[in-house]
Structures are given as C-alpha cells and as structure tokens.
Image (cartoon, rainbow, N blue to C red; front, side):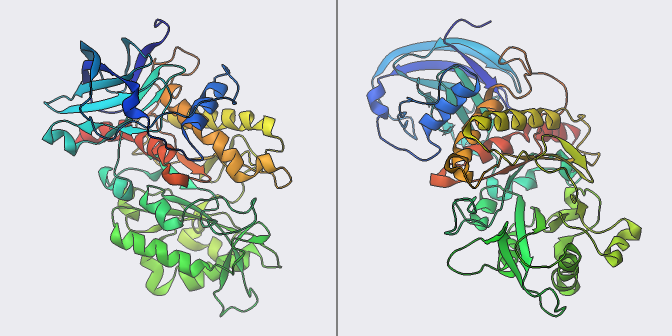
Length: 484
C-alpha cells in the first residue's frame, strides 16, 4: 500500500518513461481562471463521490496551469530516477502540497517532457516537449488530488486515429467514441437536445459511432426519399426540419478527406406517423445505399475488418427488414444486426451487439446506478481475449446517456455532467483493477472499452472523455506493432 498522499502514477500508454526531476513551484503562476460545464470542480466532485468519499457539493474551482514550462522561481527541486513501465503503475513517493509540482519525464530514447500538476484535480494536461524528438510523441495526463493518482495516456490524432490500426483489425476490437442522438445539437426541447457540437465536430474530434433517428416524410410514396431527423416524437430543431441527406453528405465529405477512417452509422425509426421499419429499410436501400452510393456503404451482416470499411459507412441496423432484404448476403440479411436488444438493459446480447443501455433514470439519486453499470460494461469489454483484434464480434456498446423528460435534474445534459467525470475517473484509476488495489493492473483481456456512446461531448471544448476512450486503444496498438 502507498503512504497517504503519495502520488501513484498509472501508465496507460505503450511507452515507458523515467521520472527524473520533481520541482515545486509557487502556485501563483497558475492562477488564471477558466471554467466549463464539465469543469475541474465537476471532475473532482463527481470522482470523489463515485468512490464514496465525499459529497458532490463544495468543490473549489481549480487553477489552470500554464501550457508551457515557463521560467519561474523553484521552491524545491528533487532529483528522482523512477522507472514507469508501459501499462504499469508505481508509487512515486512524492507528495502533493500547496505548490505546483512540475515533473520532468524522459522517454525510452532521449526524449524529454515537462508536466505540471497541482493539488486540485485539473482537466487533461498535454505533456510539453523539451526536446525536438519529443514533439513526435503526444501524451496527456489527468491527476486527481483527492486520490493522488496521476494517469498517463497516449494522445492519438483524433481526426484520423484509425490509420494507426492494422488493416486486419476487427471493428469489435477497437475502443470507439460515439455519440447518442448525434445530430441533436440545435435549439430544441431540453430533453430532445443531447449534443453540444455538430456531427462534423464530433467526427473531427474522434467520434466514429453516430446514433441517428429518422422519420420517413412520405412513406407511402416509393419515389420520395425524404427522411427527417427526430428524437422520439420530436423534431431535433425548433427552427425547422433537419434532413438525413444533408447529414449523410457531411459524413461522406469527412470520409473523403479522411480515407483511413470508418463511421458506424446507427439508424432507427422514430417520430410520429404510421411509417414502418420495413418502409424505412426499403427507402434506405433504394435511395441511399444502392447505385452510385453502393461503394460508400458496408451492409454485410458481419463485423468487418478495417481493411473492408476504410472510407465507408457501416450500417448498424436498429430496424426490422422486409422479406426481400432478409434474403440479402445469401440469406443472412442486411446490415449489422442491432434490432432487438432489451429495452433499458444493463447487459443484453442480441444479434451482433452486447449492450448496456440503462436509459431510464427517473430520479437523480439513480445516476450513481447508471455510473456503476457503465463501468461494469467497460470491464466486460476489456476482458475480451487478447486475440480478439483478429476474431470479430460482438460489438460491446456502452451508452453513457440517460434521461427522464419530467425531471429537470434528469435531462440529458444534467446527467452527462455527473456521468462523464465519474467515468473518466474510473478509466484513470479503476479500469482493469477490479476489486484490487488502485494501480494494480489485471492481465485478463486486451483492455479495450468497446463503443462508448455519450451525450454532450465537446461542450466548452472539453474532449477529455473522448481522449480517454481513444487512449484505450494503446494496448491493441502495442500488440499489433509487436507482430510487424
């Protein structure tokens, strides 16, 4: 066990480091104010409440630390020589106090970085390169002052992160950020709006699973291709209808600019009216995925490898098929099958997916239950066999989203403010630890988290959750590089 308040360093990267220098700086250098809805105090309060130590009220806003290692008066300097192995944890024997702690880390070559942390939990901090060759390697860190755990992560290039992965990687082996009711970033009813930024911003920041609900405008007219974007019974915008074809054009343009990537597009029929799933399926087949657009889509009912789907949209089907489409692909159907998972489930395997989607949170006191089942599903995904990058399926789908229309505290944004920081904290400290001591990795599985479907990512520029999900691909990347 570590001594109280000594810093545990948990390395989630495939790179080894040596901590060489620890310097204590006067905190006044870092007192520039900055805040956001998923701010530092949110992270600290939710994290500690998640571990059951403190309540969610009364957290102080944290200082924003400088983005570069500026020249300041050093209060204390300590020479250290601490080895930090890939995917391992160690006790630094350093304590955090009222000073800012500046760490100098060396890489496996002669790379050097600087990293500042303080007693207060802070948003993610990128390593600052001190040598030219360190600029080629991106890393970031999250530190929680309550538990004194410093988590190190690899910073994957979010706009084209899939190019790092082998062509033979099964889609089910990846840790994939996703968004729930992805296009609902417009002015709308509070329970309808689930996103802070546009779909194109989500894609540029690493999201590769999009959840879209559509309503056929004139289902009885086989020549009409109009699909309105909806959430439940409501349009996604109060300023006029939004169309599926415009959204699809944005996705296609992104893939044209980033041909190494793929987008999993979940489609479900919602809205008012009497359209059927079978009519929606026919519209999608006849007007959107055939003819000149056929090469844009992957519709085989089998989890693909990246080689098969780079530059393409993967159809993730949440609707029933008419008879003629059931005969596609030698009678196996059409699109990845996600038609029938149990409603409001904590763990349901159906078709090509294993899902956590506890979507009804009727009271704010139940948000802790939502957090718990999300974290349990992370561990199910992480326990997949280590050869799973070559063996497809199932797709682990973990919805962090939930809501209840009649309770203000249970609207999507309010739940996200609680769930996201707690989940980030779990990934930093408890992922692959189980009931053991913080910092003790388990060896079962490949450590991935599957597809993680979120509300309100990117609000105020906060992409920490998405960055952490992407970083969970690091062990997979290390394994693939070792096979080369």
